[in-house]
Length: 507
Image (cartoon, rainbow, N blue to C red; front, side, top):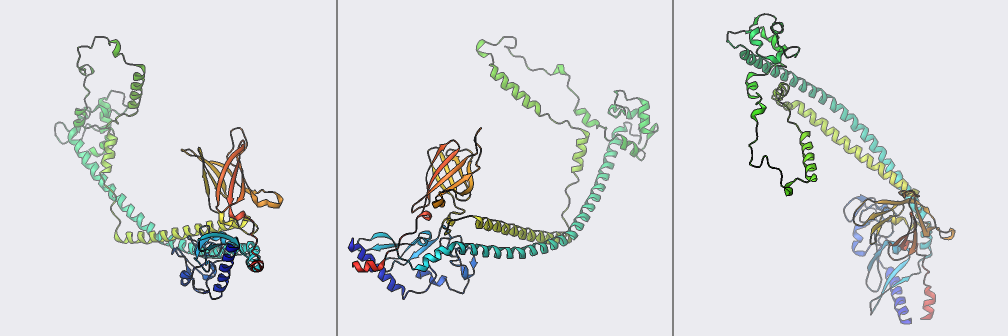
């Protein structure tokens, strides 16, 4: 044991000696990456996602997705701290472990890794005690910064709104002019088509081709009966014509009265009904024979046939009517022609203004979301040293034989069937519920989905010390009341420091 302690002591002495000449760099940054962290210059996240002022490096607020702006704090759950491990091999350890005061020491020649609590300068633990207030100040400063940027964005949004509205006015006027011109053009097309149709009908009615339509010729179209009583009389026909006979010029008034009912003779000829008695299916040799027993249709088959018949009854071929023909004729007017160049330019300008306004408004909504999230985060109690803050916005799962349980600290607990099904809320964040002398050892999640004829579900989460942050077990000790075991290094007690003076005396 003394030999190992001697090795450790020598390595620690080497670390002290080397640190005296160590190149200055932010806490947790390896020497190889020192050029990327130049004090006084903006820092760019190592994944290139964003650039921030250098004073936000190691400010205990995670700005970079890869955690590279917080190499010396536990603000980023995916962050890593560079341990020099003087005298042997440097390594990276999770940032959270570094904040808890543990150092990994590799002892040659067996390369045994020993995790030792080290004696840190007194100010380190003082800093840790001050850390909650510092975090709170940092987050409030961040909130103030975002709120300032929001005000600028609000001004920008209102400015772009004015630009958009101004651009949309001439656009609207130009589009209305274009539409009005198109409606006028369609009216001309409809009038020409109507005149052509009228001339066609006049020719059909003028059976003797004398250039006029008489009462007798009109009577050949019984569908024109004004009262639709099945009897189209000569008097009724004369009322429609107004006189005994009309020429093409006078027929226009008649046409306006009959065109909704008129059926072309050519189409009427093709739609003559075939007498029912002529419609016969070919007889079969077995037509009069009863079904053999084995061929009698089963009831289920009949029901299926009935269902098919009902389905087929739902669809009926729409009759070809004059109204539909008229609709088809109107569709022949074509589509509206494209906008002229001047109108299209106005549309493009207005569309650009709309896009810019929409983008600014979307960015403003994102800032509002960011403010709400920061305010929400500030409101949480992350422990006396904010040691539980790294869990925020994280989720941890445990899969059992039947369910997948998910714990999202400071948010909610849920349960989902392993092989498909909807998720059940087992409770949303309520409070710290440990005993008075250890309140941060228990989390309480309440007001989950209600049980059938029972209370709302709730979950108690017991925290225990461990190297990993993981859900280890779950159970339901009482109906609708769940219990989770959750290990995390954040709850591990502060390690006792190694007294170097005593160590030296023993050696």
